[in-house]
Image (cartoon, rainbow, N blue to C red; front, top):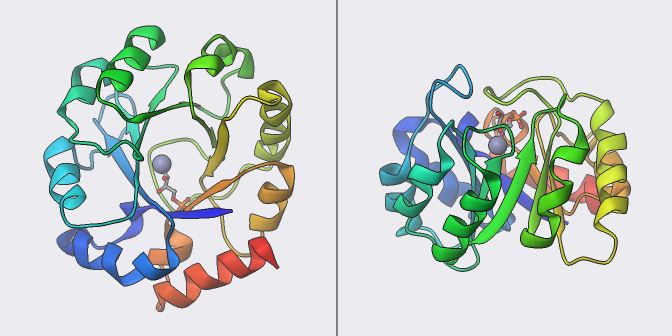
Length: 214
Ligand code: DX5
Ligand code: ZN
């Protein structure tokens, strides 16, 4: 299990400090890039993520909730152990986005909204290192976990077979439900409000890890 705290629920006035606070209990960091079109919310873009990339050591998972991943992918200064994750429902042709991610020398991740049929991502599985299962509607932190995600994780796990693809799960994860998503086959656990919305984010992250692994 790898824990990837989502900074969406952190204080945006001090993203670096918030990430540093939990770095010792984090395996990766999750950055939610939103454009106000693909989802009804705006966050940050390449310039902010790149500035943070220069100041943090852990690998990044960059979750693009934007209409045009093809246009913005080349603007991220990524490392080879970072992931760029795009939505199959975005406006761009997935094969072209996957090529752009390869040109950027990042790991490719694909994701889909909770209501999108899993068949939509099947044609691209041979070209990705990661599948992100959304367990809330993308756009906002702090929403309740959608229980259907468990079955979707299981189904994707089966679809993947022995291909070297990690499954990540994003949305509504906390210490009380993390075990069920890990048991279903998720390897990367993303959590925002269950970490940064808590009075002691380090203890909260440690509790999620313990619940997942214990
Ligand atoms: C939602 C984002 C998530 C969000 C999860 O659109 O993709 O990464 O930060 O937040 P929580 O863990 O609070 O549901
Ligand atoms: Zn996300």
